[in-house]
Image: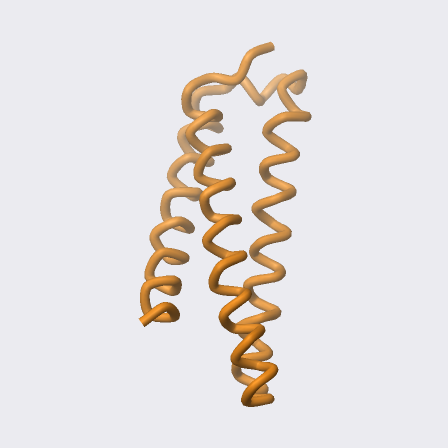
Length: 99
């Protein structure tokens, strides 16, 4: 079964989110090494967990196309909306981090 356009868009956003998280996570890790702040360590952990979640999502998109609900348009819409919201949040974090 082929992925629908909503699933492809959701997968693309998960990949973009992963790249952004690698960038901000790298900045936060560099800052942690310099400052040894618990707050920055928390940001590093946050980015690592969210990165793992996005990578699992990408794997799920490619591996789950044989599941019955994978072709459901409602599932695709919900996933796309959630990935878009996550993208916006990560973009805000990346913007303020890289300033």
